[in-house]
Image 1 (cartoon, rainbow, N blue to C red):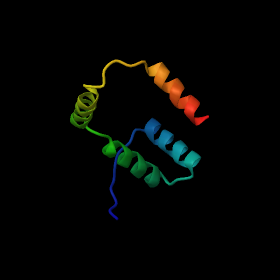
Image 2: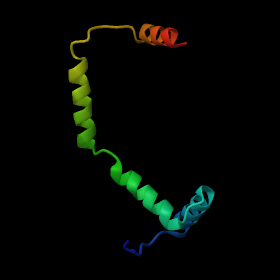
Image 3: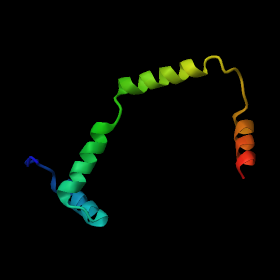
Image 4: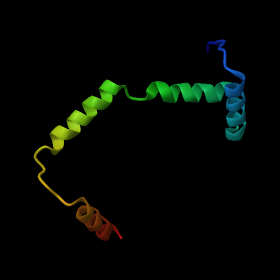
Length: 78
């Protein structure tokens, strides 16, 4: 595992420390978790491609009443 040195403003560091304490994590653990989450987010291009795929899959569905579908699904499961 590598060690890195970063600079954070005093206010941000205080927030990091408070959140790490609240979650019962180390400062490094919280920062690593936050960075991993941020770097795992899809890019704008990936989101646009996903939207295009969804639009293609629903292109031939035709009109429907979403509320009616939700009610039917709810009534069939409860």
